[in-house]
Image (cartoon, rainbow, N blue to C red; front, side, top):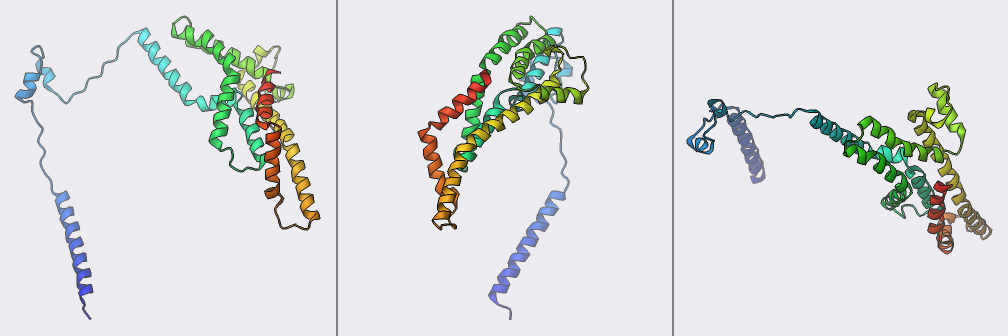
Length: 279
């Protein structure tokens, strides 16, 4: 039975089909496009000393100044952009950031507070602690490499060598085991190593990261010990009371937080963590 509802539906379909057809035909028609010529208005705005060749307003001319100074500034800008793009990797690989962020995450996991403090707070705290610890190194790099390079007193190659010297010194000071260095020296095939200057940076960086991971995990294990004891005491107490269905972590978390507050946990963790870089 043909009802009013079916009539409206068919009318709507016809209208949509007609609209689509009209748009397709309209878009497919070719329309001539005429190039505009210079008018009197443009002529009045142009200079009296302009030649006939300058009447082509569609041309774009880019001039590049020549000279060693301009080329040096361009290379410095490219080097700066490269350093900025690699800044996160440099921050993780060559500074104290790795050890700090791992220890802070271990602390949060030991407290079993899930996302408290949130990741943004932990990363921000790790960044500022990194700047605090690396301040003497960064100051040495700026005074001995960045300022002379900006003044044109040294070349980019010399600035890189001078700037890497304090960073290498910091990394050598944090490597607690020679085993890490020997492993990567053997893998790379580097021989005849007499002093630290003979060790290439490509070997020093992975050795430093491996040492930082090991140190951070040791500190994390030490932080975990008192909280594991609380978990064991709470679990045994609940079992002796016959409350085996109650999760021990739910009961132990307030006691962990209370112990952490009484012991001034953040002061202990952060203070002793920073002191590990000054051994």
